[in-house]
Image 1 (cartoon, rainbow, N blue to C red):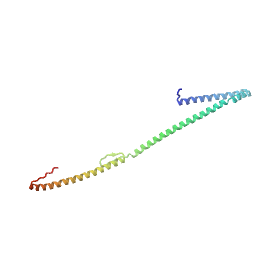
Image 2: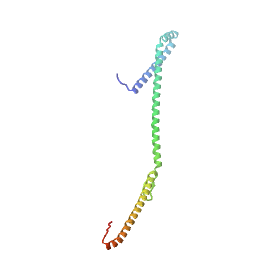
Image 3: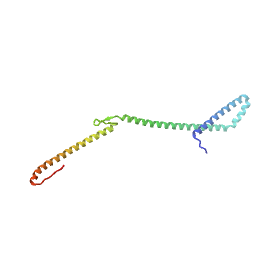
Image 4: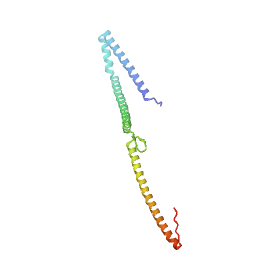
Length: 177
């Protein structure tokens, strides 16, 4: 069985419908001409095929139903395509809004301490916190160093006094830094 793409199938079906429509118009025109030219004799002949032609009427009904089903299917596909386009547009709009939010949030902050520029306030605040933390640590270190220096100087002074006393006794203590 040969695979026929759906679009090609619809095109061939549409062409067949057009041919059927033109043929039915031609038949109607011929019937009108025959009734006008022959009078009642032709009209009786045309009535007999009408009695015998419930099958073509049923076929036409079936064709019309198929056309309606095809039209409904086409409309459904079109609706689905429209919905997909709307969804893609919605996602595009969401992305655009996010980008706009990001652009509006980007405000440059500059630090007075180090003259750096930061894109967001969050990054700037983090930088300021780090600076304050470093300052606190430096102050602690300086205090500790001064305490250590004071403690080291005091024993040296005591050690000198002890050295003087130790010289008399003969014991010496040496401290090195």
